[in-house]
Length: 449
Image (cartoon, rainbow, N blue to C red; front, side):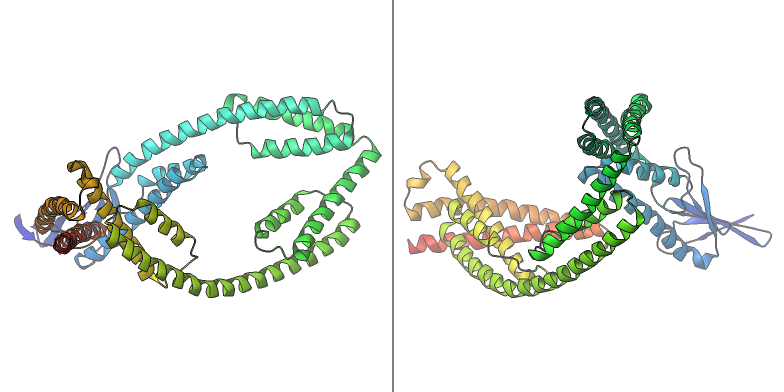
């Protein structure tokens, strides 16, 4: 047997290639996998065995690895999205099945990446959701027990029309309430269903009661049509779109009435809703044009505020907090200006705000370090400020130098991590530039005093 070596491009380590009787056999190590005898494998991890991904030639290795790394990244991104929703949304329990699906997928997922770290992320998230769901089910159990008590009272009501409305309300609240604890679920659902069924059985024994139900449903249909018509008559299109969509859902849920009656009222309903949506669309278009016109006025107002802020930042050295807050409020109330169309306006405001905060920090720090600072003459105040700025500048320059040295020792030339480092570097450079500018400003103020 003769041993030779081969260096594969970029991601592959130097590995021995064994040649025997004219047949080349090789093993190439790659991150989270390897190529053996022209077959790409995903590495084993935890209790999961190595997984065969693809048979390939030597020339296909680079493209194949990139392909399977991308598949892993897609799975990781999906987990990132679920984790973000768990952390930010209120209906956390609905994401448990998605989390479990990813966990079950990992053992057979065809990709290249750190799958173990993804499993390590999933475990605490499942525990969190399990606790959340358990607490919700305990709360839902209490709510449904209270609804059963209400149902008992409703069943004693001899006013069938009033009781019917109460039953509808109870059913709505019951359905909106989530699942109770598993041990009581069947009992609670059985009691509620039995109570509601007993009401309808009693009610359906009377012909008059049946007609009353038809009348009640007809009134609901008519009330929905009337409400949509009222929006049209009042030209109330701005905040009624979602309400109309909800009314459409209610229309579907009202229930059956005689076919002839339903056809007539349903034709009226569709004409009214079509008219509403057509006029609502025209209203939105007009609103967009008005918004575009208003944005020009807002841009002018914000530009004027920026000029005021520039003067305030320089003239008060960050000490007039009330004036700054007043300008912030004025900025918020000056109307909408698109960030995409006018990024420089928003960036100028942020830069001036950051400078204000930095100046305010220096002013307050100088007050703490120099007793009686507020009562000193302007020249003496700027002398104190000068010393503090000089110390802070020296500290920032030292940190900037260390940052440059650390980045120079890194061998990463792409990716979000490098972007983050560049952003931090820019922040540090801005801090040094501002301190130098403030140093000159203090020196000029001392000369002028």
